[in-house]
Picture (cartoon, one colour):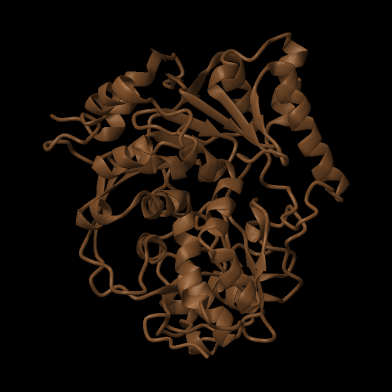
Length: 469
């Protein structure tokens, strides 16, 4: 019987089988940020250990950083302490650090690929659940806890329990205005937030092969929202072209790159490989998706309505009622009748240059509704520089949006960019949990194009037919 892509990466990185039934895996890249690493470094000091491979460990500040022009002045004491602590720890242990004064700073899952740190066939870990983003390159990438961060720092290995495999086959062509964000929201809507628990998803099919790397990263990024341990896409010529771009300092070059590509071409599931689960989606008639509740699975077509509590698969009606109460919505309410207060375009899901271009295309020559605040937050300083070189910043500013510095921003309430209680956002981020964007804030997940259209209209609209004002 053939091997899946997951099998191949797993076996290539197995150091030992442990008596507990776990496997000791070698880790190729360890990415760290300011929130989940401080205690891990303290643990090293207490044990008198050093970092095993500082050359394979890379750090940036992203979760807590302010994104306004004066971001070097971190006003929140806890945020400032975490950022300063990360900088000191990296200096002490010899780890490369991209701080607030670096042109390479950004969201950890954005800078990893753009710097060439993320490569096919690797194992990649980070103390952040959306590490699954890197699986778009055919790397086994997943989030870990703080104690595991310490284990990887000390040994460059990790004790892991083997996952089951889940093939997600996506075929068809996306209609104009429908995006990879809509694809992954529909998948989560169909299988539920626990549908892939205990599994690693491999995304396959003609739609996946047609996507660029940004779209693939968006889909893999939200694998965790379906309960998956990780998401994977087999590398191909699209992957190789991305890695070969000249501005990726850590990617192999010349003959080394050519040799690596030959190896990488073997990183695909064998034709006779058997998966534990399968799911198929034809996207030919897929509509833009909007979440109405408090999990990413609570979503529907933009042309649809808020459902009745007993019409939501995988969710207890009592939980649906609680979600609707929190969101201030009623069953039967048309999605396009829901007004918004804030638009957030950013996060590790949708803050790459392609995402900003999509939003700018909708906003060009338009003005946002007078009562709507719009934050456009690039995923890295390099994305910001590229957007400014293309004039996207001028489009955003002319439309009445705020053009911010790089960081996680309003994806989560750990920095100054937060919703006020009962404010409603159209957000390109990955989670719409209660209080995720600020205490009492109400979050609706959408694509960048949908968010931009909502900003103009002041409520949700179907970007496929939206003409603007």
